[in-house]
Image (tube, rainbow, N blue to C red):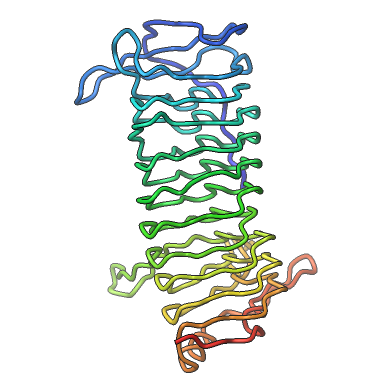
Length: 337
């Protein structure tokens, strides 16, 4: 589902100084004085008709001798920016701060940036964004952070990254590779839905947790969301690490070029269709993988036989389309010990 972000915000804080920063526009940059345990600082946003935001934006490291540490929620959304430079002093960026800047081609963080999170929807629908270097300090990429950045191709996943949240890169058609660090613990729902990935290796660090509920019954807290790699039409090869014990619905669904999959003996279940409010929410894990030929299984024949019993292949027909897990069951199995 596409999330829309409004481009205008109501600024309730006292406006201390308003300085025009864009040539030929009528808007103004707004600094709001705040305070934290380190002392006083400024947050920054844009006030005025947002489409008048044009050209290059370089956020200053300080204002009136006081550091600029925060970019407000939706602070520069809905404009016509072409590039953005974020100083190292900024440690907090609000949700959808630069969303819907359709002309934005480049965004960068100054050397020494200590930002730990790419905020929810931060660059959502920045359809011209081509590259961004994520600081090595980032631990989490927020929900829909790069949603439908359709031209984004050059992006790094820093060592130390722990979470890639729901829809983070959905619709980033030109992303062809993703080197997941061994620190990564979670890949969210539809995180790479409809991207250009050609190969996926889910690291062992993406690990389901077995907990108990209030009645003492075991419950699996999954580290992989529904449809994480759904409709990756160029995906040819995938490896699921040993931390994944349950492969959720839609994980590789509609990956029509997928030929080879490596699975671990730790995998105990491959999910079928999931329904919400009696409606189909997500199809089977391997639905539509028509090119799948080979399964490389890191376990014994006996372990594969046990897994097969828990591959949900119950078909579901909707709009003359049959959803099932038959591709993974008819593929040739190779045992890798």
